[in-house]
Length: 331
Image 1 (tube, helix red, strand yellow):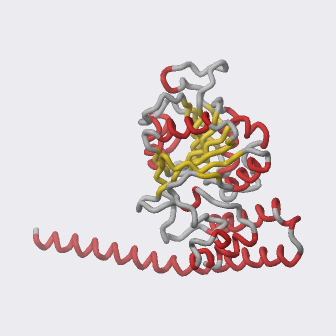
Image 2 (image 1 turned 90 degrees about the vertical axis):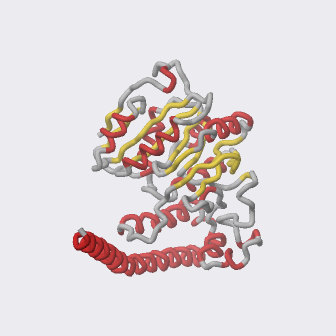
Image 3 (image 1 turned 120 degrees about the horizontal axis):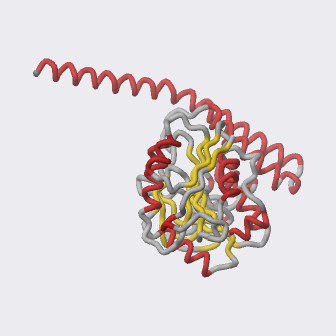
């Protein structure tokens, strides 16, 4: 079940069918209330002449997100789902009501810079042949989120990446087809695919290729979308003249089984959809076995992390209790 709120757009402009904002910013929220509030704050603090609307799609959060976001930002257009529909479905819901010339997929765990919207919309306006673009994406420690500029995960590219060959030969294009590690993150150039954490897409490209493939639940849909956009003749560009910070879940904490499953399922879904017919049974079998092996190793690693994390948590609690006891004695 979907509930939508029709509210004024930024700048007091009326939300009517005649008005077309420059960009519709779609943020999917699932139990990330504070992160989403921080993300929204960074959007509304943008220094820009770009006119935008913000659409938040909540996937049945249980942390009071709908009420908190609606109270803090009544201008946000909210879609509140009764179930967790997944990333692809939720973004498609946002696109159905979006009015912008461009669609920006923006993760809830990101912070945009004051100039991000201005720079990226300006780039797209100057390059009408570009169907989608992305900026530099930085992790909290200052390192690059390598997913922001990638090649397509062909069987060979995936092999070189999965078995660490790309790390052994970081300057060889042949072995760095996926993460493009041989290309400077400070230069601009066309790429195969961007990351769904920040993807600015032209309305005309969406009208031509459609929205995200809802076969994907929460991984792989960004790569699939870029593949279809590029197949339709549009350019895809990495433009690092601005950046966002992505607070992605890259820590070693235990991941739910569903997350691990969906991540690896997306690999096979993408290969089956775009590559399986190009290759013979031996290559396809090797891909399937490789994904299965990686899935099994991820499950094993996740199982080993859990007791270690619990031990660390228990140790932390013990230190807190010792500190409290010491304070009581001193008092």
